[in-house]
Image (tube, rainbow, N blue to C red; front, side, top):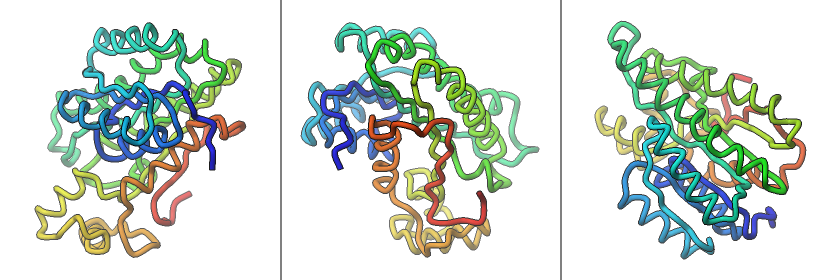
Length: 265
């Protein structure tokens, strides 16, 4: 399907690897100009090369720490100057890394979870809005998580941050409707991310085997999907690309579960 993305200007925050990179690749393959933003220069450089090879004109990797408002603003100022002051797509795929039970997490870890998982998105949207408003059409897609609907005892800070992100995204969909900027959320289920594969190794499971990974998730967390395997990052990309495209002409304020089937709504 032609998503109407040729020459669209897109930023994927957290686009250097995993589900963010998978989303960026789908945009690139449809002809969008894609900038990936993150903290690690060599990862971003490799991602930009990959995106250019997939068809993205002027693919870029830009280093910024989203906990620093000045760094975030610098990135969007640079892109605005480079791309004619307009931006069509903002995707926020950064997630907090706080893992630990409620009684184990320090105040510092709670603050870090919200700084990474909520305020990072807020800073990016705030800096991007002048560019999004100037574009003929604009979309925002934020990554939440299925743990906001199905709790895990070791992820209270991560889940709380993602729930806040989901709530703010819903508010943005209301506030920005007058500008016809559509804001949606995707909630990945058990996707074979680097973090999940790393966890699997600690319990003696090959996380690169999606069937073995789902079995381990069932055993340790009691959260199996209806499908007998974990998802893959590349399976997130097309969903995100559609939500971010002009083909999505009337969906806003939605939270889309991509989870292999589950018992939550």
